[in-house]
Image 1: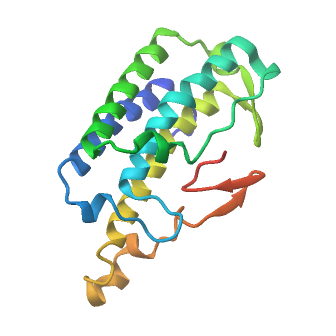
Image 2: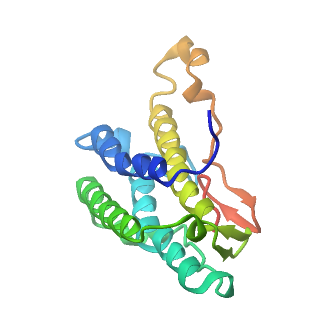
Length: 196
C-alpha cells in the first residue's frame, strides 16, 4: 500500500463527499442536524456550513496563491466562525445544494490546472504551519472531508448516547473524543480539526 500523494485519488474522494452528505443528511429530523455536543461544538448543520466556507475561501484560493505567488504571500487566515453568519437563515437543503455546487466548481477548476509534479512540489506559507507544498494542501483537502465525515457521525450519535443503554460501551462512535472540544494548536484555537 502506497502512502504517496496521487491527485487522481484525492479528486475521487473529493467528488464523493457531496453525495455522501446528501444521502446522510437530506430530510433528516432536526434532532440529527441541529444539535451539537455542547458548548462551542458544531452541529451537522454547522459542519456543512464550515465545508462550504472552505470551498469558497480555503482550498482553491490557497492553491492559487501557491501557484501564482509561492511563499512570498502568506495564506489568508481561515475564519472558523464564518459559517454561522453565512448559513444564517438557510435550510439544510440549501446548504447541501450549495456545497455540491461549490465543490463541483472547485473540482472543475482544479482539473483545468493540469498540474504537473513540479506544480505539486511548489510551496506556500500557512500562517501557523509555515511552509507547505501544493500536494500537501490538496491531500489535506481530502482528509479534511474525512475528518468532518467522522465528526458528523460522532455528533449525530451523541444525540442518542443515553438511548442505547448498556450498548454504549460497544459503540466506538460514542467513545471518541475526536475534534469537538476547543483545542489550542498551531498558535491558536481550532475546532473540529481545522487550524486557523
